[in-house]
Image (cartoon, rainbow over all chains, first blue to last red; front, side, top):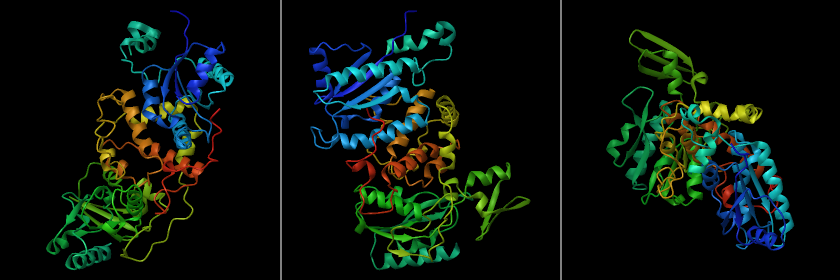
Length: 158
Length: 316
């Protein structure tokens, strides 16, 4: 079994964080390869279903990034998102999801270095938390057949 | 109790006679003891079906969404708060409603009584202010009323309707020093893994009947997320992951909308304490946004508004 690497799904707002990722690439800033970017029109577009779906499909961590409050392309989308996320994060942690798996940030399209920095931090925190197994469907009998690698194989399948 | 029944009948008869409403939503005696069923009375000659006692726990706000007609509805404290949320969410207009407010002292927990009877079948139930007397074939047992209330009624702080056109009794005294979040804090004190296991065991008996969803007055989406298939957000199996996803999303849909009326828990055939999910949200909404659901008609629901200085310490 090869060295485990965390899988992180990053939902980035088209108008800021996605641009920051782009700028980080253009500026040749180094950040870990563990994030898979999904571009969304606004952090307000994020539905809790997306985050749960990411976990269910084998993500070890989820990172949502949008524009700084007051800078939303749609004027107030991230203000609503902020309230949603506060309750969502709290409830997820309350029901037993490791707080190290869910991250939120505000990154403008000019903050490439912040993007790279936060990406590093997110990856490291999720690495500390280890592979996520809670939301992944595993059939009990598989454990004996495939042992520890089950979650990983399932993640590959999905 | 019987006084309420008389007053509800009198009000219903009057409203129907004056043609102020097209119908009255209330309760009639169910086919089993300890079970009353909702009834829609459209004619004055059916008014005598209406009753009121400690078994009227079903939340009648459930029957108000997307109505076109004008109705009178019998509302306890929690029902009235759900009506407020419905009006805020444009599910019904205030002028379509004639609310018959009932100051409530809590509804009976049928399951607790049945459990205490230990298999003996209740045939008759008599209620007084302080006691509930259950009798059946060769037995009679008296329960102090406060011991057999629904869990949410024990910690209720809005017993009197917050909105009504007519109050059918004198306001009752609100419970002052109740600790609403004792159980939530107990869970919060656990470690992450303990919490996961706690909820895993909590929902383990779930058979995914969706009774909690159907009983909830706030669940009125035309297509529920559990029925969506493209994309399918929740698996349909009894796998713990799917059950967990269902319970989590159902609870999250109640964020800033749940009035803790207990309809979900009451409806659950497996006696799962599903309120454990929603109570955490209720506590957070109160602490983070200072909002109490369904109390002020003029306020916007917490997730439908924002303040520039909302808490954001969790965001980098």
